[in-house]
Length: 597
Image (tube, rainbow, N blue to C red):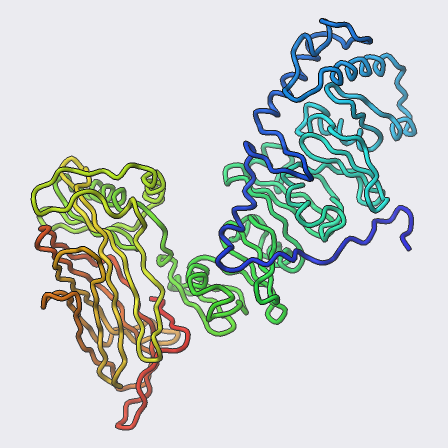
């Protein structure tokens, strides 16, 4: 039995939404709240910011136009003087004005009993507001607050405990135990996902307040939070978008232990969801994710480790769930242990889409190149080479990424060029440069594929042309000491080219800097084909080894293109070698190929 006056037991179950790895980006998008296109909440479409502004202005004008009429006086009503917003019934507006005049004419009692039973009418609507809901409504500013006007009458909650009333901008819920609190539409949009007060969130136990500070400006700067019986709903600061999401349970506890919104994760930007295996749960934040598993607890995954882990399939991939928190060593490498292996990642290896053209133009300007120059754009940055052979590498900057976003919608230009040269810009407007994770083709072969963007600028800093160059490199362990590097030019429709990749063989030494133990060079295109191969030797000592690219050289005679660059440095997967003997086994790539540099 429920004791009268006690809060009913809210559902302790959490969200049952299952979100697959490939659907998580779209899932996050569901929590972007657009004030110009508010969602439908419990069957009612919200007001846009422009409509809210119109309501507030009409209300201000009505009050300023004079006192309310105490009877219907055609041509003299507030609705006649200032008009009414679209969709409002004029007769209801006029009758509410008369009711307001009569209420104001009544003597006012200030007793507690009177306050508990007092009701008021508000212009434009037939729905009165009473008791504790009225007190909260007026404390927030009444009709001129973000709640605007009541659009439904007061109702008893389905559990029989307390009351609620709907307003244009949200709701006010009153419960004998949890109190009387307003819930804005953007928060109610999340709350309704989980069954309102009957769901796992339960009743609100506070209003929406700034994460830090106490004013509305503080909230817009620092973000907002509203507490419920079973969890909390956060809204990101205004300058960081408009994302509203819930968080609860052990993931909430872990996040708060890390510092909450001021932690490395930032604000939650999507509700907690279940993983496809039915065992784990996760929440997505501005700068990472928090994963929980019954056997391993809750752990954040962020930065370069998150980038690499997601590319390997997240918890559904080879590494499985995180079993510990991430750490950073003295060299700045990020490390985290997972169920089936450890990821070590370099923050500089986080690849982002950016404009090759914008990055090349910026790099040339920064390095004083004001003549014709060529460029090669890789996933890690851009290399520019001037007419006298001066070379400069630049990592992508935020403005390069922003430029790419604008160029996506630009028309693809074409320039009249000399005979033999390509025309137009193939890459930068079509897709970003790309480098894949290592592909394991059995225990003795691993490969990576790379897309690059090359091109030339004229003296006036216009891009003359750009073309995508694609290639694949393989490491083949077909003997114990002597191994092969295969190189393929995979671009379609490209004239004959000579492409060389240089690199080094390194030994991975635990708790000590890696050391170089050899070199390799492989060239594709010398024999008229798009393939090349070379051999290198691995030391006889047992150990963990890996290839690392250091320099590339590309020549396309038909286009007059000749460039070399060292800006694309990456590892080609670690392999384990036993001590060499006549009968020793071959070196092997592990099931999970580690390629951190």
